[in-house]
Image 1 (cartoon, one colour):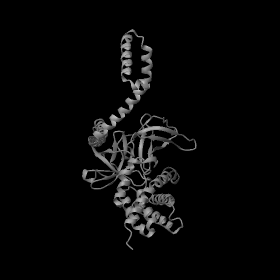
Image 2: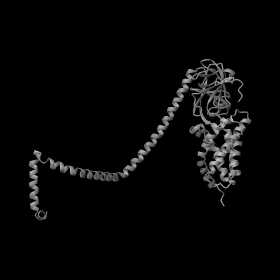
Image 3: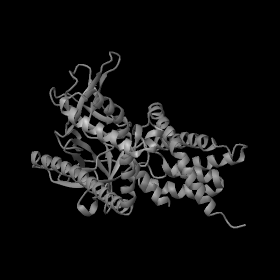
Image 4: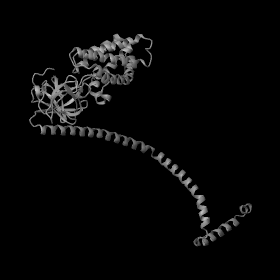
Length: 155
Length: 275
């Protein structure tokens, strides 16, 4: 499943990219799983997804793995709060996770010696991505909730 | 009226008489007012009856043809589906043909280059990086540093190579830089990606004349790219007295995020490429 998501994100979605950005489907899958099953259950998914993205990316290896794992795990902490059943939770979780994901990614790029512009990246990449991720979050979250219910351990 | 009802013969006589009178008077036109009045009264009735009967007839016909109509609808639906698929195929073929024509044109105008056509099979998953993956690799004779172009201009260069695929850093990536020159004035500079899909030519001295519309080509300096490949066109020039260099916005004709087919310049060996 993670492979399908990675292929969708790299080969299919770029053809339909509004505002010049592509939704971070793998991040949304990780965040959804984290909201549904908790941070601990989401970490293996995020690690696997991150490794796949790193494999398909021209960036420094590990950038996606680190960013995806930490931001997905952080979204899992939402489970602790009182709003876990709120319909707005996926919106806030995906927005926060997107910002954290890109902040970490930019930090890794910076450490790896890549040229980074924090200001323009925030305005021209992170904000459009955040809006797009919020839009794509609901269908992703519903799909993952369906999977969550199907794979719940009996009893 | 009761007199008439009780004596049918009287009624018949009156009607026959009226008919005879009408037959005699009709050709003379004396009955025209009566005729007009009668038809004026009858017309709406005629229309109503015709309307109802037409609907009833259509309804009955529809009911009769219901079975065959269902079959017909299914046939038409399958025809529409087939035509839609054919239409999509034809559009794809048209786009492919246009791409191939452009590639052929590039090959004809650059006969010295050894070119290999490749298709784009993936984009970078991060919105912060601008890379594409192509379906040709080491097995096809590709190597790191080889320039990648389309007929519309320079696309980037190969930064990673695998047996069947290769990764290409697009000009728009922040880490990309190409030594360039303005075709008209021979002014040199470095074209870099702005990380958001645009190109900026930097290190252009303030004294140099650069104008909107000027064509920007690869300079060939440094040995990373061949000379005279089209990079784009100047769209804006930013001069600032405080700064040492002016900044030139360059618009490429290549749609980097939508490019589907590219050409790799195989014969060119780049010097000291560091990814």
